[in-house]
Image (cartoon, rainbow, N blue to C red; front, top):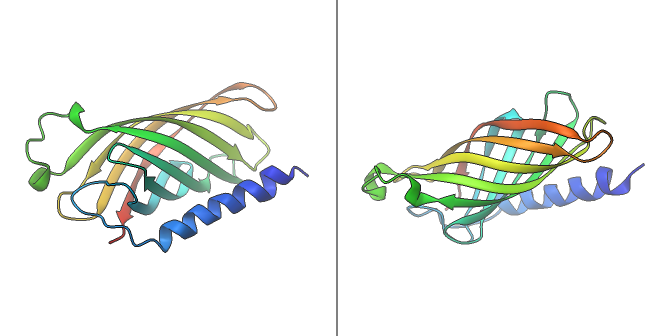
Length: 164
């Protein structure tokens, strides 16, 4: 039994979700350091998502869910947001904010297939102007490094609610 895969990583992920759920971060007009969003993602994996903002442009995202092959999938990514990529949004206070998102991270799966991989995240995030919600979509190539090195693809759509 691999202790790190079956105990340590799931425990650390559960702690991140607990911090996110019981946080009292402010949502404001956009992301700020310390904001925490919790929500759902549909795709691969399908499950729960939590995002913690480090500053106005960077965040850490963790997901726990279920992939196409069954078993549990754990994901952790470091994300960078470019809010200047979409200049057609003239007034973020009334139109919201749209960001191009890139990042890198890791994936662990417990179903025995492709147990560990490195992820490259590409996506879009939309932040509503007067509500603490984020809608996002991402496509994520994965470099599988354990058992049989190969490529894989994660991705999906989701939403997060930011606590006040």
